[in-house]
Length: 425
Image (tube, rainbow, N blue to C red; front, side, top):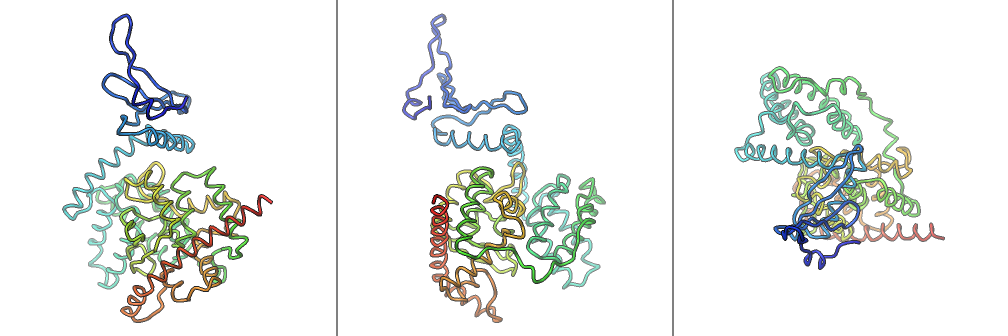
């Protein structure tokens, strides 16, 4: 029988008739979750099986961890098992990451990168080659490296970075169509790891084999990103994504894809989101220029629906740096995670991609009658050559953008509901 808060509060340990001493009791809530009641405490524990072996994990003490929170933790644990992860190992990895993060914070407090981090090695390499480059080349390459290498991977110990981490970084640039940047970043990543080997900071170069297999040819310029703009088909797409995410995706991927249509950010910017960028009071997502294609800060007014999804997500990932942390390791989700979920919903790359939400928004917003300037400013497209005038327009149009984002969110919801009704009929 499922537990209740009142029942938990009233629970007491048993009295051993033979000894007269109090004896711990276990109150089951189902699905492996139970409360262990002793004379000194009431502690949540969960029993699960991994690779055929029974294991036990503590979820905290009651009432610090309430019944609802204990169930949520158990649900997250079951999700990890479904993904082939051992929750105990995930917890150990998280504790290790937290300890390393504390060490990193100490260095950051001094304005320094951790000596064994990719960031420190990359910056040392830049200083080493600085004398061989023109000043303009140095600053250009440094800006690129900080954004595309140090940004996503810089905090990781350089000797722990895997080929898959580097591959995801390159894939993100390819998915965004940044082929020139991809070529330069790939070459410099190889050079940074070679430098790391030379100075004894790492043992191998995980970027080399990935770099050798890359193609830097641009795709057909007329191809564009696959998208859907028919209102009926948009509703069907949203419905299909909801169904697939409910069945197959963790909360990180599910939430990222649920808000993607409403914020229409580039996939790389979306998956790189950090909690420090969310302004709950102003109901805005404030993205630094480092993460934007045009290197300019960007503000996304958050519709009611997006805030609801973020508030729910915050209960699971809010204590970390990223909105959408990567499974079982540090860092954030890659854009490939979104593509896989879209494919699982039955949409191939020629039908729809995660970048297609931007093209979808442009078409639908124009049909809804919103002004060109409001739409394109929200896409972070530059409309004016004069930077001061462009900044002024962005500030002036923020109220209109806020109104547009809520109206568009409501419109998408209506398309989803219409698709649901058609499906029932």
